[in-house]
Amino acid sequence: MSFMRWTSWWPRLSPRHFSVVGLDVGPDACRLVVLRGLPSQPDRVCCAERLALPEGLVAHGEVLQPAALGVWLRTYLKASGCQPEWAYLGLDSACVSHHLVSLAAGLSPDDVAFQLQAEVQSILPEHASDVCIDYSADTQASPVGESRYWVQAAPRLRVEALQRVAQHAGFKAVVVEPRQDAAHRAAQSHALLPNRAALAPHCSEALGLALRAWHDGGVNFLPHREGAQRVLGRAWWLGVAVCAMAGAFWAAGFAMLVASAAQSKQPPLADVAASARAFDRAQQAHTHAKAQQDRYAAQVRWLKAKQDVQSQSLQWSRVLSHAAQGVWVTSVKQQGARWTVHGEALSSQHAQQLVRQLKALDIWAQAPELAQLHVMPAVSATGWPVWQFRIEADLKMEAS
Image (cartoon, rainbow, N blue to C red; front, side, top):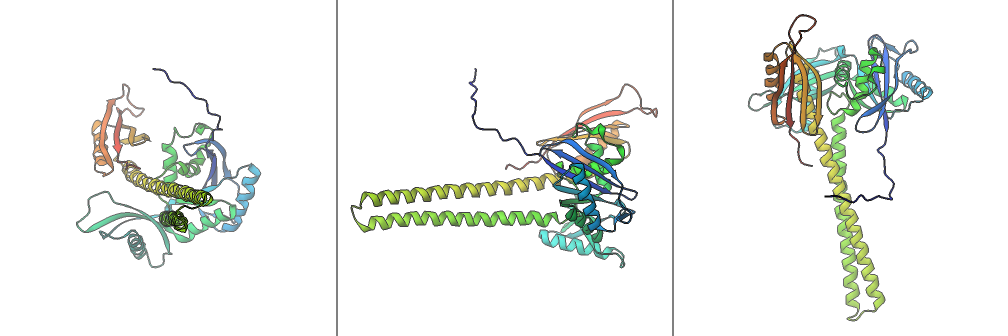
């Protein structure tokens, strides 16, 4: 069977490029990477530098003068020809604390956030400053009537200082996360950036921060949950307003028809034509309003799907990052619902133990299985035999 190829005369709209900056405020130096790319993946490294900052702006991983640092960065990036839109910022992992907190089951999202904030603040020493937190549900079985959460906390003063740096530099702060998480992301993203080899090794944390723009999962000490709830709320109210507007247009059109018919049993042709035109306009307005409502509903479903994917990513990445000794993950790939992990292990038992840990997560439509497991023909440099493995699974994906 052959198909005729039609040539469209309409201009094709190419996806819009955007650029992001990863700013790593480390204990020894401040590093910066600017990436440019499509929404699907980055395609160019615009800048990757260790910054020679004026004295007194940053000390031992802490920003001392946020406004001055932001102005300096804006001047530096402008001179470099880079104009990033969003900023992904890293803070010293040493100032981040980790907690496992149990709460009563069935709490609303607002109550969970409030209770976790209060619990973590009470655990910290009395002299500790106020903290920003981010959390995720624990995947292990909890006692009846309880829900457990993994919580990470960072000093609020440090988080807000990084926000002010981005504000004075002229771009929007999207994420503040630990430097260690960014380094882990950079190590696992070999295939995402084509010219990664051109980057200096000392910029790995800044690179991982910039790559967060193309990853859904991860810690974020900024109030991202409140922003997502505001988006959902605005979409719901807009949908209500659109429906009300559509109903008003329909009522107006019908009223005009009834009024026109009541004036005379045989109305003039001009009145009939005017009523028909009014009815057509009301119909068109209703169609447009319905399309608007459908678009907002699709946006709400898209945001919900993104949040579900982020929750799944947090769970499996936590298992991979805390895998037992003797297992090394070399790559993770997700294409749609299909999820694949490649790695190496000292024995087949180590690889099977990782599969059992992954199977315990309630995120799979098809549980993880060892699709490939074989010992390498040659031993490693240390003299130990190395097993290569591939784990495949299907994630739960809600229909949009």
